[in-house]
Length: 114
Length: 111
Image (cartoon, rainbow over all chains, first blue to last red; front, side, top):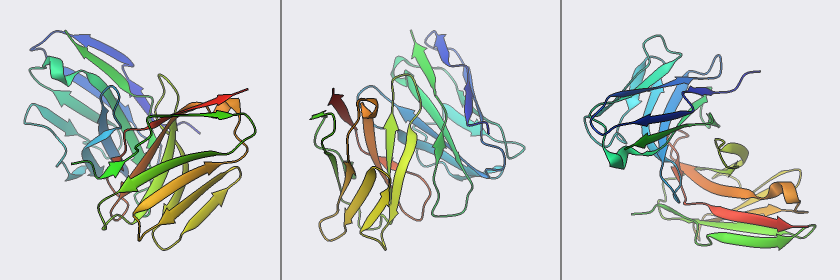
């Protein structure tokens, strides 16, 4: 079956612009996660959705970052007033939502802020 | 503070031999541990997991060992194959939700 998909695969933007990153989880998975991976580091948690609601957004670095999942499936990560430090690979993962739970990752979106 | 540490940035092993990747953690509330493999330009791929109620889990060539008293886990790959060359991430969670990752270990299997 289809895995987690993310679009776009690459995004180059200028400092100060707004970007949206999309994640399509595995069908039937109720839990969805966003992580960010900087060069030479492991993925870092940003936000976790259970259904339509954000169950844990403690990893969002500041109020420029926002994510939605309005119908409990596709999610969009939104970054306002991008900064060069936002450059990273943004990874999305989904799971069935029943602990203990394996998270399956998408290929990521590489964001470059010039 | 790094709650999950992979102290070896890289490891080189001969094809057919054992690869041992190590991971240490500091948070005693972690109760679920996973290993992921990552190839360049791809997302992490799930390999194997272990719950804190176990000390060993095996799946084919991959075995994960958990030592709760030492807060240490390891991944054994036997026999190692060139296709195993990748970055390996250790991850941990409390109650199976958000994962905390180590920085990764680059494994190179030489043929």
